[in-house]
Image (cartoon, rainbow, N blue to C red; front, side):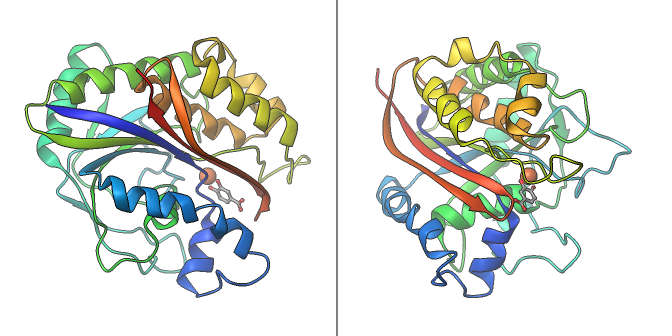
Length: 280
Ligand code: DHB
Ligand code: FE
């Protein structure tokens, strides 16, 4: 049986990818950021997951405003790093797991979640930066990835409640796949940031940390938070945090916190990162 063994959450700030790709990780600005992932890189080397369900958002890269799926699952054999305007990042092609992805689509859609099935998609910083933070700069990603794309760009976005329930359905889907696989689920994006308008640059440390406490300890209560509160307190791009609730929904009600890191600022963003393991 396949099993979800752990959840990882991390911000996906594109400048982090540029710092790595351009060999600048030891500069004073970047050193403390990458230091926050030293534990994580060793941990994942030891854990050796087979597959990651990587919950991320596309930033109008693969999906234009012509078609914006609320939730989508990638069933492709591979995904190319996207050209976001300055050429694709020099990172490996992302290998998929079409069999598990098709099984998840079958299971979750039959549980009434209307996932869009995506057979071809280039993946932007939302997906590749978390891989870089956790795995560094390998020749080949040491894991297969099933991209789960969530719309947090065009309103209306899905509620935290719906995201959490999708996480629970993803867990049931994984656990009914008849192959021994070590599967992790990652929630990405966030934490507080606003890239546009009069409040551009907004960061809310206190709110971010209280939100993290609740994500760990009382996620069901946290699912009641409205999208308006995310935008008001965490900024227009802070809404990316609802994706962390998909990850949390796929884990046990009680979790052990293996690692927790928060650093401000990273580019325009408050960078948050946690590793959670099932405690039950
Ligand atoms: C930044 C953060 C994001 O989440 C993003 O998608 C783009 C830019 C930033 O902090 O610069
Ligand atoms: Fe983003």
